Length: 451
Image (cartoon, rainbow, N blue to C red):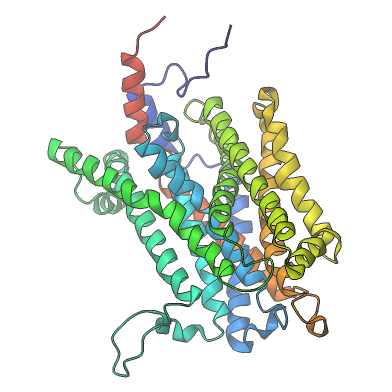
């Protein structure tokens, strides 16, 4: 007999307990020592980022390891990696909402915030990679007196439109979903200053019928706008590579392959963060074992699509008969960057196979290790795509080896600190789980027939 599925909500949850437990985290300061230590370390990373960016502005991008023939280095690698991490939030919030999947309820708020923070980290890299970031506005199609317009055939311009649209829609979608919860925070806050701040942020929400009517219509409309962005944004990032004539990049598989990889890395980051947080803050009754299990299954499914993309790259190189494509594929396997390639295979292909076992999926320690492995593997994948295609091009006389510098690493770890700092502040001041949707789930659970 097939065992019953784990519930989406632990028994004993009521409307009052949901509101009390979720508002207590930001309002009553029950933050453990873990929060203070984590925020201190993360804020130190932000300081490292500020120093790194200041030095780059003073000295130029030459302090990075980029050089001919590898003109794209950590900046583009990290840009693609951060954009990919942000995809899980839009996927969980928008697409699963449109598909009426109730298991998104407990995790959508957290993943939406994670999307915004990841996009903020990603946006730093292409701006700095310009070399003259003070002229960023040249990429915008504004009518100037010289009659100059951006080169719309440039992938850099595509990224400006794609990432800015993605960030704007994600921000509005996240904020609209917060409105009812901000009103609850306003009503439960102690102190006039807090109540005024939350009241201002809630935009006068009073829970009237007209408010709920407009809220639901707008929320679904924004979900409909956000859902195509899951496909479009990383497809455009994939086309940054695909339109080049360079072997290893010039492939039609890149747009869907990048989308699958983005959702793969996004879900792995969600699991990496949410597994310890649900234990630290005692949210096992709202983020249940079934939520974790379903996210693990999605991650495993995306891993198979990514694996198919790897196979397709090698098959296309062999089937094309082009010696340059074949050499790039062979160079990745046995060349100077072969250890990166085989680490990539171990983390992105081998590690997720452990999730076929239900017992291992329910073992949070094993699942967390697999999620961390996928995060590392997806970064290495971007490294392999960028560097191994560039360091040996058509002319052997121009071959070279890419070496990242101290400032490459400091900028990268600085953005990790920025991401973590924003995440800690989000947990400190806003409810990390949607009270509105959790209360709706409580009502539906109470109405459901009992055995």
